Structures are given as structure tokens and as C-alpha cells.
Image (cartoon, rainbow over all chains, first blue to last red; front, side):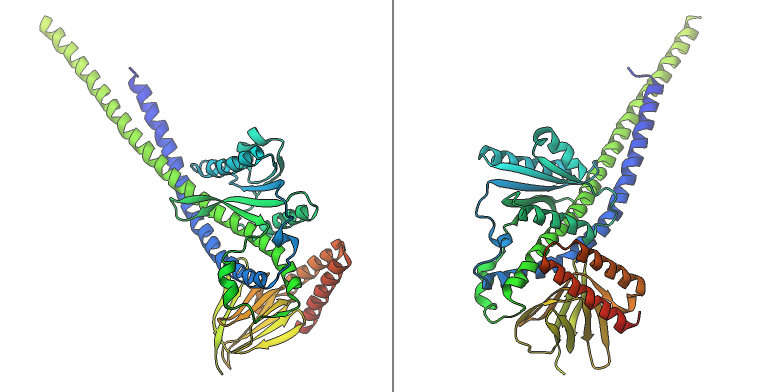
Length: 290
Length: 133
């Protein structure tokens, strides 16, 4: 049985931990609000972009390679976006797991897999199994507020690699932010571009567009831009998801610590009471013996 | 004058959304003015100034650094690479822009890229002169 002093120390240490988790939760809540606003502010652009792209792409029969792909799928590039920091529940591991499953499935089919890690935590988790496949780690640790200037170089790099013929299909992994308690790990194909709702839109409003300059030229500058935008969107969704995941996991950690303190305090009080009773019995029985 | 719906979005945020009477757009192949009932059009933009006339008396000017304009039945949408209200644009900002473009020009590998970069550069320089910054 632990002594009273041990129990006291244990309670004090759990209390200190609880203070930290509480503080982390509050910081995450404040950051979440900003990250969520940024993610929501970026949505209109991405949505309009998709609509415009769908309009243009449906009018073009023979698109550039970014749209149609190389016609092969032998070399696959996986861009895995995770957080730079831990202590956010299953956030990082669920993205890494999705990427790992995909990579394993592709390897089993005999494809070549290349991985770019954005964020250190995903790199740490994937390194164990795919050391040889990881070609680059992009760290965004020093970035406070995710801006388009952070996403653009990543998008440009992907396009440069594609133009150099280093891969055929590119997929990006990130976590979609639904709510504080729900983040969905998602895989989206970047190259060849997937145009959502292409069939539906094609029939309605596209036939009569005037293009200035020509369609091909617009498409040629629209597609690279779209990739940067998709990366940007993934990073923003990820940032919001990370804070959400951290907030809810720190909330449960705080609650857990509270319960632990309660239990320990009861044990402490019982032990203390038992000792007092024991001493009293000793004194009384000593007095009776006289 | 009749009003139509106009939206100006940059990657970071929605800058303007609402009904306007006319919008002056710096198209890649020449400036144009958008009024209600314009035929569907898709155009690239060059760096320049977008003039938004919300009503006869109220108008806003914004600097955009390239992008796309789409005119459809639902109105005009401008997808700007970057948009800054003209009031916030100062010498330092525009000089940084010029420096950026000069670097682009130096980095350009192909003749086409070089031409595109030098065109952009000249547009921004013209703009700087026009604004007397």
C-alpha cells in the first residue's frame, strides 16, 4: 500500500498534467476558430474553380496531359499531408494509415510508389515501412498562418515532376474537416484531374461560351493553377482538422485527469482516515491496559 | 442601369459578392467593360485594375495579379490570383511585385514563358506609372 506522501505526490502530478492539457485545449480552440475561418474562406474559390474547369474541360476534346494523364498508371505519387506536431488524437495516424493501405495495395499490384510527405508526423510514421519510397519531406513547421504562398511551391513541384515524367498518377492525402469531433481522412486524385459533375454540367450551359484567348490556352494555365489550389485547400482543411482533433483529444485528456484525481483523492482520504483510526485504537487500548 | 451579380474571389477569401452595375476587367487580350446581359465569356486576366461600379456614385478599384473571369447566366465571377484594394496598394507593394516578376523573367526557360513574364512585367510597370507611385 502506497504511503500518504506517495499518494499526495501522485495527485499533485496528475493535477499538473491536467493543467497542461487544459491549456492545450484552450489554445487549440482559439487556433481552431482561425483555421476554420481560413478553410471556409478558401472554399468559394475552390468551388468556382471547379465549376469553371468543368465548363472549359467539357468543351475541349483533346486536353493537355495534366487533364488526360499519361495513359499509364505505373508510377504513383502519393502526397501525404499531416501535422507537424503530435498530441492530437488519431489525426496523424489515421491519415498515415490511409496512405499506407493505398501504398501497400499499389505495391501488391506491382506499381512503383513514390511518396512526398508534407508534415513531419506523417514522415515519422511512414518512414518505418517506406523509407526507400519517400522522395521528399516538406516541413511547414515555421508557418503560422497557412497562406497560398505555402501551397503554391508544392503544386509547382508536383507539376515539374509530372512534366519530367517522374510519375503517372498523383494522389493527395489529407483530413477533411467536418466538425470538431469529426475529421475524415481523404484521398483525392490530382493528376489526371478529376472533374466533378462533368457530365451533368456539360449539357446545360457550356456550348455558347466565348473564349479569350483560345480554350487550350486557358486550360493550360487553369490546370496547374487548379493543382496548387487543391494543395492549398488540403493544407487548410488539414490545419483545421488538426486543431479540431487536438481540441477534442485534449478535452478528453483533461476529463480523464479529473477522474483520476477524484479517485486518488478518495484513496488518499481513506488511507488517512484508516491511519487516524489505527492510532486512536492504539491509544485507547493502551489506556485500557493500564 | 440594371444590376447583375458579381463575385471576386482570391484563394484566401471571397473579396466581393453582390449586385453591381458595371465592372471593368483587365482581360489578357484587352480591357473590357461588363454590363448586364453579357454573352457567356471566359477570359484570362493580366495584372491590372478591376473597377467595380456598384452604383453611379459608388465605385471600388482593386488591383488583381492575373486570374480568370467567367461570365455566365448567373453573372460575372473573377478568380484572381491575388487581389488588393487600390487604396491599400503602395509603392513598396508594387515594387515587390515588379521584383517578383523580374525574377520570373530571369528564371523563364522557354521563349513562351519569357514572353508571358515580360508582358506581365510591362503591365505592372505601366500600372505603377499610371498610379504615380
